[in-house]
Each structure stands twice: as C-alpha cells, then as structure tokens.
Amino acid sequence: LRDLEECLKLDPSFVKAYSRKGAAHFFMKEYHKALEAYERGLGIDKDNEECLKGREQVLAKVAETQRSSEVDEEQIRHAMADPEIQRILHDPQISLFLRSMKENPTEANKAMRADPKLQE
Image (cartoon, rainbow, N blue to C red; front, side):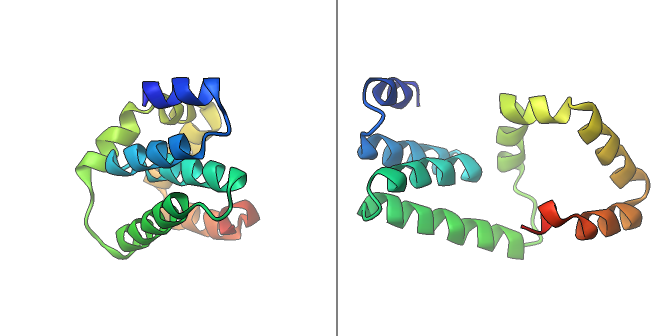
C-alpha cells in the first residue's frame, strides 16, 4: 500500500494504482477503503474494466456480509487497527451514542431509523 500511495503522489491520475489499491484493501477486508479506491479510479476513467470489476466485487461482498449472521473476526481486527476508526471511536459523541446503544438498544435503534443521514 505504501508503494501505491507513493505512486499516486507522483501521478494522481494513474488509474491502475487505484485499481491495485482497491484490490489490496479488498483482500485486507477493508471494504470501504477498497470501494473508495475503485471509485477514485473510475472518477478518472469511468470505463476502466479493473475498477468496474473491483467495485462490483466489493459491493457483492458487502451484500453477502450483510445477509450473513456470522461475525468476521478478521474484519473486526482490521477495523479496530485502522487509525480512522480509532479516531471515530474516541469522538465523545460517538462514545455517548455507543454507550446508549449498549444500555438501551431498542431506543438507539429507533433513533437510528429516524435519522435521515443514516437512511442513505
């Protein structure tokens, strides 16, 4: 990933680097980052076959994961090691929200369903 980041610093329009970055994130089960990389590549070349196939692969995997009741421990470990996730978890509002979900999941679920931002 560091090589890909360096490559993109040198040439931010190099679509193949976005495609490979997407694939790397996909295999690390960082689906949101994979999707972001593929979307960035498609922003440069909307017909790029590797980015189109990669994006479809990510969307299919996310849909499969949402249908499954199994917890992917590896995906959780990757997420918890992600600095962006750590920053979000240390946000006081997020901490308060997570605490309320733990203490009263029914009310938290109602609040989430009523929030238009979460409906997107």
